[in-house]
Image 1 (cartoon, helix red, strand yellow):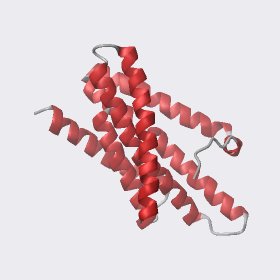
Image 2 (cartoon, rainbow over the protein chains, first blue to last red):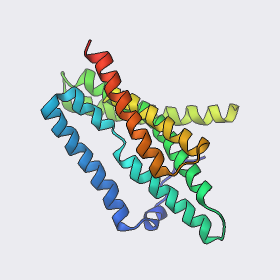
Image 3 (spheres, chains in turn green, blue):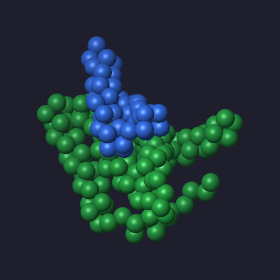
Length: 142
Length: 51
C-alpha cells in the first residue's frame, strides 16, 4: 500500500463536517490551556492527547462508508464499523508517535522551546512512519 | 501529554475491539471508550506523578 493524499475525499465531506473537526480540535486546545492554568501543566497536558476529533471523525467515516454501500443497494452497517475500526487502529499506532512528541518536548523544551518543537515534529514523523511499517510487516506475517 | 498518549492508545484499542467484536456504532464506541480514556489518563497521572 502506497501512502498518498486523496484530495477527492475532501469533496465527499460537507463544510459543516470540516467545521466540526476543526472546531472540536480548537476547543480541546483551549480547554487544555484552561485546565493547565487552573490545575497545572501536567493535568492540562493530558488533554492534548484527548481524542476529541476522533469521535467526530469515526462517526463520519462510518456514515460515509455505510452510505457508499447503501447507494449500491447493499447493507453498509458492517462496512462502516470496519472502516471506523481501521481508523481507531491507526490512531492507536499514532499514539506511540504522539508519546514520542511529548517526550521530546518534555526533555528538550527547558533548553530551547523552538528546537524542542522541531525535534518533536521530526520524531513524531519518524516514529509514525516506523509504526506504519511495523504494522504492515506484522500483518504480512499473520 | 506522554501519559495522555498512553490513554489514547488504550482508547483506540478499546474502540477498535468494540466495533469489531461487539458491533456497536462508532458514536457509542467512542463515547464509552472516552470513560476509559479518563480512567487511564488520570489513573496513570496520579500513579506515576503523585507519589
